[in-house]
Image 1 (cartoon, protein in one colour):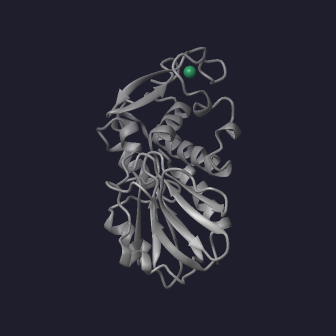
Image 2: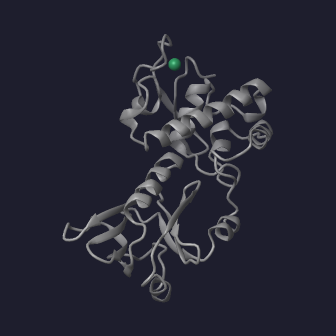
Image 3: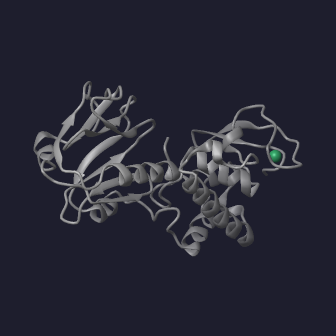
Length: 262
Ligand SMILES: [Zn+2]
């Protein structure tokens, strides 16, 4: 599932490719039962407008203008926003498209239908109504350490709690815990203050690097988990000598190294 770095990469793509272009139409794609998309009246509100700014909060992307309306997109498990120019063919599994003046198009590809597109007037009001926590890269150290340090849940589950920390999912929680040397199943309440501080710093550094490389995993350091995240792979941490494996934590598959993560 796209997480903070992947969503930020998408936001940057929209910023580069989709601003200051007049919208001729906003349309729905094919096979759109069981996916949350705007109705006809809402789609009509976009006609004649231009997007002039983008925002992101955790895993929610916003595209709009000061006077609104905005579209907000959640990519779900496998959704992706793809700008392209007609007459290039539209991506398959397109569920929503924006036709800009000229050739530019924006397609929301969502094969598993677990993402959504909504039209909203005010991103702040939307974020507040969703009860989302502060963005992982925007939150204060004390808020983070108080929450994790007070959590009886597995650290991995706590890191992925969108109501408390917005933007971290399965992949990046594994990376953060790999680098911190903690077992994903261990409890936040068992960490001492120094480890909580290290966890916060590691979270910030890992997500920032993910944002810097625009979620291109081939540009992550070789000694990180994500480029090596497979059962049986040698642990990429220098001098560790362990092998990567996985277990279920809070219903999610956590990859980790049982030698240096405890
Ligand atoms: Zn290891």
